[in-house]
Length: 341
Image 1: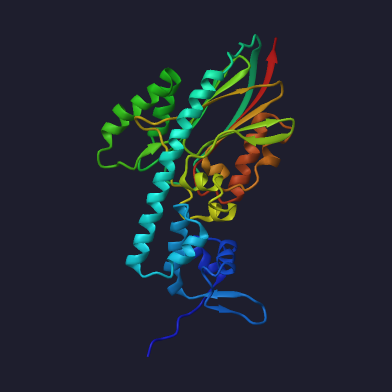
Image 2: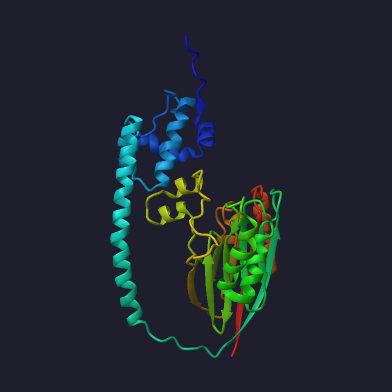
């Protein structure tokens, strides 16, 4: 006789599945992942350990961007039929992407032909800045940063080395993105034949007159504080962030997804960086954070918009990350801007 399974609370089941209780309630409401038992008095949900595999399958399919309605049909199929359904879905995704690529090429050509020549500002920019750079609970410090009057940059290394991020930033400071890529390819890449998963992100802000020129690869972030309002300037180069922006994942699913830190861009030969220009105003504030900050402090706005000196703001952010348990390396650079005409 088979022993009955010990049911898990929704909280324990969520942690084991790498999801959140809120996501599980959504999947229950849709009939996608109903609990094994619902308390008739409290309505509290409990799940069987045997349901973990199904929960992880749903999370993986959502990572592919598959709509919930299609997942609902797929989970009831036998494995061979489910595999065919996944292949059919992905074939359609690739066909749709090819069509959009043609539209993008046409649109970019059109916009470039219509672009106006930008005027050069005669303002001289003054930057006051502060930074916090901590190891957290990691064995290695793989974050790195640069803070000079003209260049502010952060890098977040991954893998088994702690010298990749600082090497990339040093090369970027001298030779820009080309120099950083060359350093990774020749210096680090050649030394890592058995560590192909090692690498780094890179996010930099170069001040030029009254503009900030941003180079961004990975999941660090640049924030702009203007008139007391916080705006995220960069977009995270992660699979989950892309699906969130496309409306294919909810905010709660993205926050709790077991693969939420899976990068789809890092500093490698052939990488295409996001490059943008922000026109600056007097009293603007720019902030750079690595994911060890914004992944663990849910609401940075009250901290980044506080009326305080840059170092005080950076220190307050570090305290908030510490209170969140600081499980990762974390770096924040705060830059307050003024102009001398």
